[in-house]
Length: 182
Ligand SMILES: O=P(O)(O)OC[C@H]1O[C@H](OP(=O)(O)OP(=O)(O)O)[C@H](O)[C@@H]1O
Ligand SMILES: O=C(O)c1cc(=O)[nH]c(=O)[nH]1
Image (cartoon, rainbow, N blue to C red; front, top):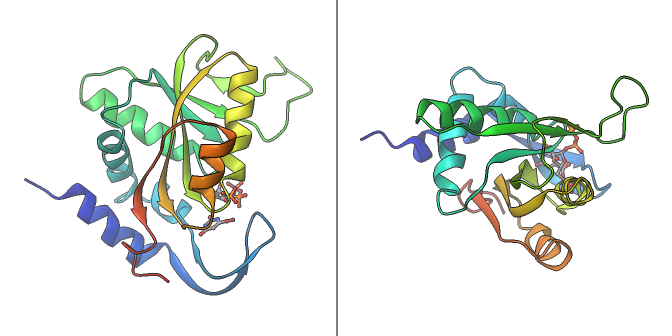
């Protein structure tokens, strides 16, 4: 049996971890950055993302998956395709950072979320602010957010913020310890 989880971990270590001073989305400073777009948009690694995230959330019942653009988008589509390959239909959606003023003026694009059980996903979570924005938009649109799932958790407050502000389970595929970061 192939170790998909182990393979993806190695891909992340090899391709996504960048050491050096960076300013994060929250405005905080950090000594490293995990650029998971180099994974979720990589021809070798991206198919593994869908499998690992489906396995991670196998005990959670949801019909559609997505999160705040852009980090979440390829996570959701990778899960959609991996689910289809397993014979199960899984829809995806994209939560815009702001509403759109033209066209159909939708904040959430793609699958209808109203009245459906949805999983909010993320590539990396630092403060959890981005995914919490997605959760708020999804709830406003009438979705039932059943959980939050991220590929890498940086152990910098996201778990606590999601528990307090969203009140749903939070799961992640890899911790910073898995990546050998401190
Ligand atoms: O938990 P948080 O503190 O919100 O930080 C994590 C977020 O930061 C990054 O996105 P970024 O804001 O850089 O935007 P992008 O996805 O559009 O690149 C990353 O993709 C997460 O979405
Ligand atoms: O907090 C962030 O902005 C952030 C951290 C990180 O490691 N990777 C990323 O894409 N964003």
